[in-house]
Image 1 (tube, rainbow, N blue to C red):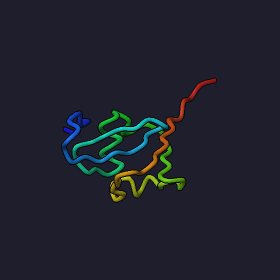
Image 2: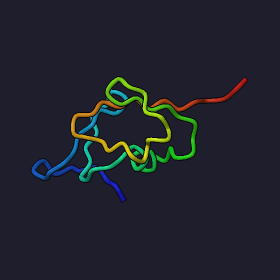
Image 3: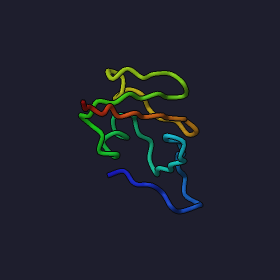
Length: 78
């Protein structure tokens, strides 16, 4: 299970997610991040450092310290 790291001295990765800083105590890919956020299986779009990430690459795209991510969830309705 992934978790955020609260220890200031531990090695961690920090990303900016929808404008908010998030720290993790392990490296992860986009698919793992979506699972952590309970967004797997939902209709979403992911932008990493200004570029759209194709859904087919979610499992291959490893996040790096300092990445900026925008995740948008599609909402249906009428």
